[in-house]
Image (cartoon, rainbow, N blue to C red; front, side, top):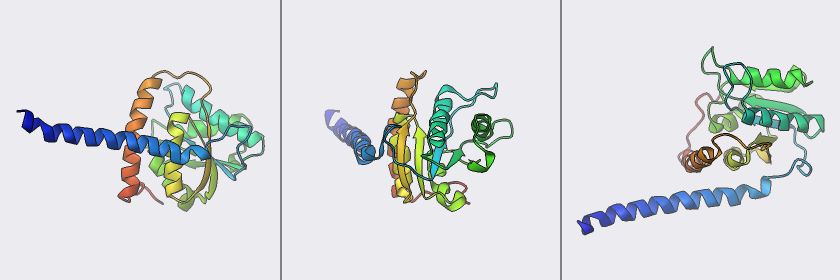
Length: 202
């Protein structure tokens, strides 16, 4: 029995090693691209990845904080345009219209907001940014736990990107988000390594 378990134990150890290595490598390889609001270099675009919108039509706390970060960058003149990218896979759920309206109500002209209705995954958002919207350089606005993967996927598309963490409060389910994101980083590396494309590239 013990001999039969050895291959299983070896496989599990290898998978755990790969999991840890991928996470540490991604964080270290993108760390130099993470800036505070006060020191981030200017770029043409801010990219705001989508997050949950409540049934009331209000953005969740995490999404609101991403939008506030983009708004601050725009008002400070550090970006000229904002790309909001999220889930609009069903007529009854539209993250990006909520994101657009939130920014517009706070003074950003609609002409300076581009809407990506097919940002179902971070992979989709970054893969579509340049060919669909002409984004070549950007500041990514999202929570720190998600920022490293977003930067990695943007780098894989040869975008000139930096990021500003959008953490402005303690979020519900933060531990779960960290655990899920650790796995998502491994999936992101596999996506890039295998050349997986966005669902709707154009």
